[in-house]
Length: 129
Image 1 (cartoon, rainbow, N blue to C red):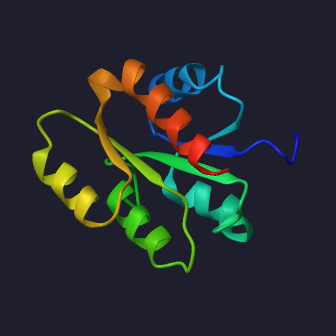
Image 2 (cartoon, rainbow, N blue to C red):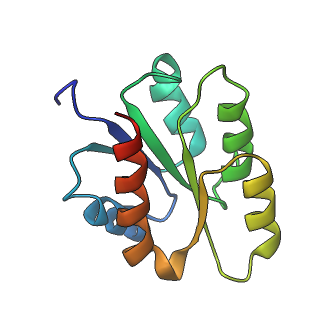
């Protein structure tokens, strides 16, 4: 892993969705690291919170244990935090509103992630420099 490439953290409980997200990000100039829960992400990333190399976090709203919204709140409580993209279902208007109020960089409906995720992540990574 090269230290000069930004890290994109993908947090998704569903293994199929997690693999799809990682595949969508494959062509970006970033190191993609995936996690099956907010807790597993936090356990591996505590020393990196606020680190310049963490380009963004993509998390599902619905996760086992700590929810994506709880993770967003926790990340936002740090002095510096990466942009967070929330994923949810199109019917989950309440989660979308809550995510944006809590400071999410975006809320993307899962059925649109194949088009929206690569574009939005590329935009956020470009803004790092």
